[in-house]
Amino acid sequence: MNILHVLNGDATLAGFEQTGLDGDVVVWRGVLSEGPLEENIASAHFWKARAEWVMIPFNETAEGYQKNMLNVLTKLGEPYDEINLWFEFDLHCQANLLGIMTYLSKQTNLSEPAVYLICPGEYPGKADFRGMGELNGEELEYLYDNIRSRLSQMDFIIAVEAWNIYASRNADLLSDYLNKTTFWASLHLLKPALQAQLKRLQVNDKGLNHIEQTLLNIYNSGITTKTEIHSAFWQTEKIYGMGDLEIDIYLSNLSAKGLISL
Image (cartoon, rainbow, N blue to C red; front, side):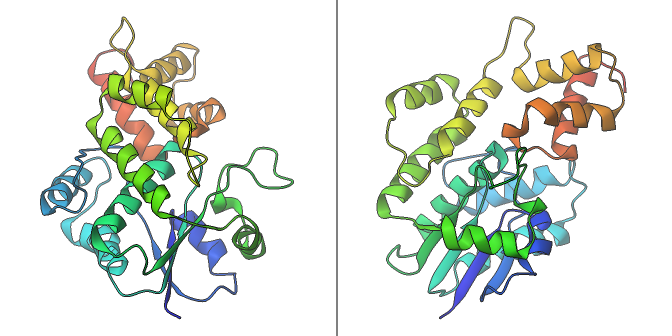
């Protein structure tokens, strides 16, 4: 059987290499929680816009993007019998999961391959579970054996609908979708992530969204170095799943508005 594992990031790769699980492995390095979006994730225009954007905040090159991102898309189109998607509860992962599922829905016959999801929101004995990057091979195999679920046609229908609304970046559409949707099938951690996205789309009377206001509050509290700000932000906002470079995008916005000086 030809099997593909799609991991949510390089941090998970180290632990995964300790498992005894068979199959090819690719790391999804897309950051669909940031940057330009459109509904048709399978279009050349979508990925061209993504490639042009990612070079600045992530210091990526065209060659690097081809290797780290576009080659992964090629793997998703190969004739695998089974694809396992390893993604987490936060917005960063859930946005990537929606994108991948939407891409797969446009590229493959969903009866072949079988697509499975491993999506932990918690882990036994880890009170402050941050993600699969902190798990070893044995712990990742535990997830595989105990929470892996096969995605159904309904899961893909929900994912495509949610992706289209997410990609629109329309707060009213997203709010209405969250209020009306009561069934999430196997995508049981999608709603909290989309609620976090809604908070990011809405702005206060200062013109700041939730992330910007939270970072400004941290800065105004006397925490004024990037490293300390990153740490303080993660303490309360792990639902966003943001890395240093992603947080720095928002810090740069605040600097441009003259609200902070780093």
